[in-house]
Image (cartoon, rainbow, N blue to C red):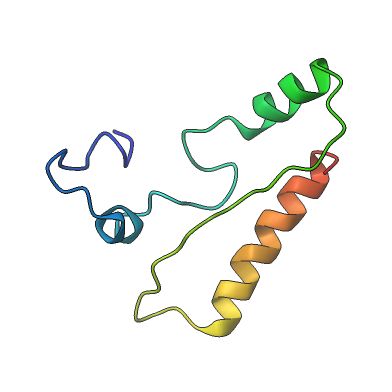
Length: 82
Protein backbone atom coordinates (compact mmCIF):
# COMPACT_ATOMS: atom_id res chain seq x y z
CA UNK A 1 0.00 0.00 0.00
CA UNK A 2 1.30 3.45 -0.86
CA UNK A 3 1.90 6.00 1.88
CA UNK A 4 -0.84 8.24 0.49
CA UNK A 5 -3.38 5.41 0.50
CA UNK A 6 -2.52 4.63 4.12
CA UNK A 7 -3.23 8.13 5.41
CA UNK A 8 -6.43 8.81 7.31
CA UNK A 9 -8.54 11.12 5.11
CA UNK A 10 -9.68 13.04 8.21
CA UNK A 11 -6.10 13.82 9.22
CA UNK A 12 -5.16 16.50 6.74
CA UNK A 13 -1.93 17.47 8.47
CA UNK A 14 1.14 17.61 6.28
CA UNK A 15 3.27 16.71 9.28
CA UNK A 16 1.60 13.28 9.55
CA UNK A 17 2.17 12.59 5.86
CA UNK A 18 5.80 13.69 6.10
CA UNK A 19 6.48 11.51 9.14
CA UNK A 20 5.09 8.52 7.26
CA UNK A 21 7.46 9.13 4.37
CA UNK A 22 5.19 10.64 1.73
CA UNK A 23 8.26 12.32 0.23
CA UNK A 24 10.79 9.55 -0.27
CA UNK A 25 14.05 9.47 -2.23
CA UNK A 26 13.49 9.96 -5.95
CA UNK A 27 12.83 6.72 -7.78
CA UNK A 28 11.44 4.94 -4.71
CA UNK A 29 7.91 6.30 -4.60
CA UNK A 30 4.67 6.04 -6.56
CA UNK A 31 5.50 8.85 -8.99
CA UNK A 32 7.16 7.67 -12.18
CA UNK A 33 9.61 10.56 -12.51
CA UNK A 34 11.23 9.04 -15.58
CA UNK A 35 7.85 8.97 -17.35
CA UNK A 36 7.19 12.61 -16.43
CA UNK A 37 10.55 13.64 -17.88
CA UNK A 38 9.91 11.55 -21.00
CA UNK A 39 6.48 13.18 -21.45
CA UNK A 40 8.00 16.65 -21.18
CA UNK A 41 10.66 15.73 -23.71
CA UNK A 42 7.95 14.32 -25.96
CA UNK A 43 6.34 17.75 -25.95
CA UNK A 44 9.70 19.36 -26.72
CA UNK A 45 9.72 21.20 -23.39
CA UNK A 46 13.00 23.00 -22.70
CA UNK A 47 12.04 25.25 -19.79
CA UNK A 48 12.78 25.09 -16.10
CA UNK A 49 11.38 22.55 -13.66
CA UNK A 50 10.98 23.11 -9.95
CA UNK A 51 11.29 19.94 -7.92
CA UNK A 52 10.34 20.19 -4.27
CA UNK A 53 10.67 17.55 -1.62
CA UNK A 54 9.51 18.39 1.88
CA UNK A 55 10.86 16.44 4.80
CA UNK A 56 10.08 15.97 8.47
CA UNK A 57 13.31 15.54 10.37
CA UNK A 58 13.50 12.57 12.70
CA UNK A 59 15.70 12.03 15.71
CA UNK A 60 18.18 10.04 13.60
CA UNK A 61 18.53 12.77 10.96
CA UNK A 62 21.66 14.88 10.91
CA UNK A 63 22.69 17.74 8.65
CA UNK A 64 24.98 15.27 6.86
CA UNK A 65 22.18 12.73 6.30
CA UNK A 66 19.82 15.39 4.94
CA UNK A 67 22.51 16.71 2.58
CA UNK A 68 23.32 13.16 1.43
CA UNK A 69 19.63 12.53 0.67
CA UNK A 70 19.36 15.66 -1.42
CA UNK A 71 22.60 14.86 -3.24
CA UNK A 72 21.12 11.46 -4.11
CA UNK A 73 18.03 13.18 -5.53
CA UNK A 74 20.16 15.61 -7.53
CA UNK A 75 22.22 12.78 -9.01
CA UNK A 76 19.02 10.88 -9.84
CA UNK A 77 17.77 13.86 -11.83
CA UNK A 78 21.14 14.33 -13.51
CA UNK A 79 21.07 10.70 -14.66
CA UNK A 80 17.78 11.54 -16.37
CA UNK A 81 19.47 14.40 -18.17
CA UNK A 82 18.33 17.20 -15.87
